[in-house]
Length: 245
Length: 242
Image (spheres, each protein chain N blue to C red):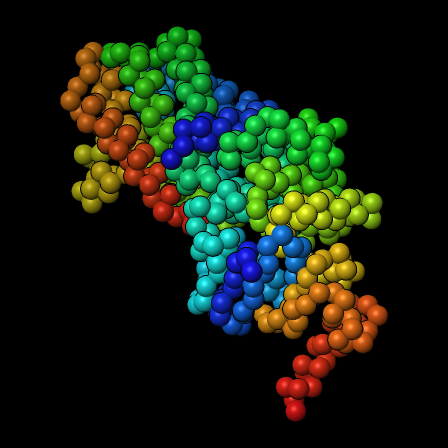
């Protein structure tokens, strides 16, 4: 792995994104707009907004980064640039880390904007330290990006890539504890949700929401999320083949 | 004699259950322009993919500049230009070149030099998506030239270019070959073949001929390479039927 090549790849991916102003605007502004919408949906019950709002701070970046990264990587595959890159000295990990880091930076800016809107303008109440909310959201956005990189290997077209959103993200959304506490679900669903990355993000965020100090569960969940990022990147590297049929 | 730039031995490739290359054997000399000619679908691109090491091979070997095709050591020494320009359409010409330069650790000066070599200096800041087809082809070529490769593999590099530009590119290929670079390029247009030092004629995944353009003309007693190709193909068909 080469730090120089990975850094240049980050720069190149960000440069491509920068040219697409509409995507940048949607990426940065939409989560804040949706949060504002949610705040007034629960106008009469701020307690509910506190609970759902903090969970969504983790869910939005995950979904958005999953989608954007899987399509971006698919473009790299279908435009022939991936095949070409793999005949140059770039390593697979340089490429994946480059993509992951570029979208992590975008996710960090998006998360900061969303957190700022939600915590200060919309008065979302959180017991714990705000830096944990931001940290977890960024980790979870990177997880979304890493999962997107992996999943793009299984999509031949952009249509298919977009369809992976309902197939891979929506089940996690239903089972992560947002709609009902996980321990009140059918036991097999609870078991399934404990295999899903998003469950740990949501659990970690609700720990921050309810406790002033960082809890053991929070640290464990954060560790799991970081570990899963690594697993997704390694699996994505395995799916990148220099030689194809 | 110096070892061949590319040595292909008993190469067999099957794609989607269909045999695309049948037991190919060939040695391609260094410092020459070798043209791979034949109708589309005859296996030219597959053979080139084998040379750059991105094609899964069923059996046989491809040795490039002394190493197995696709080995890590070759990634700095071989430049590959695919048939459709594989560059980033949403980046400028300069950004594309700088990115590919960074993969090889090439200098900014090298980027400027390569850009002027393919006459794109005036469009440096234009997005590739706004360029004409011919300009895109040249951006793609420039991205391969930037690393100063010893072997340049070009898949249909002159398709759809205007005659002036085509002549310029051929001149450039000859300059590269004179400086010791081995050039392997494909074309389905026989006119192009006269510019090559050596020709490999392909049909249905096999070689029909391997010679210099002049030798092919005298051997078949024809005046142009298109007729030579037809003569060679009909000879083969006759001998197979006999």
